[in-house]
Length: 229
Image 1: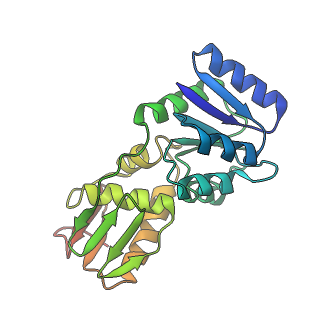
Image 2: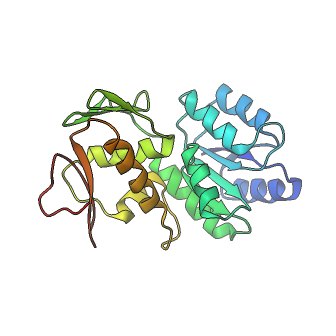
């Protein structure tokens, strides 16, 4: 398993690199955002471990740039910033999971294994639900003939909901698919559901994203019986 490790603190980089190699991973370790982009765009990796506070190009910009080039390798973000707004910013940039320093190395390995098991995103040509069209290949969605402006993570959540249109999907389902793992008390799913609902309602879209209280969420074409907004 090949890992690109991006960490500017020498001691932390050495510890993580040593620990990963002892677990059998092949590791390329770099210290700057620019080096990370050069490496990730030049050769394939199965996982990127990305510190957010980096010299030259910060981790958020590294992540956004890789996603814009179609690099869909799982990205585990590592940072000392633990506010919910910081996590959302990282996920919006295209990160798959977010680990706050200081952390236990065992938890780090568990999250890395979860992302490696999931692997890179596999794209279908298009997913349609009523007048909603989700195009994984381009990361774009149109509803009622109008483009829906989405961040990479919003798109990932909408894609999952569209794949399971008409079904009730739980908060944990969305966490497992879109992030792999987050703290159980995180409200990040509610934040993203609220954003998606407002963006869909701002278009002529017939499709509605509804909440089934105590159960989960349903994306459906028109009113969903028994669903609550």
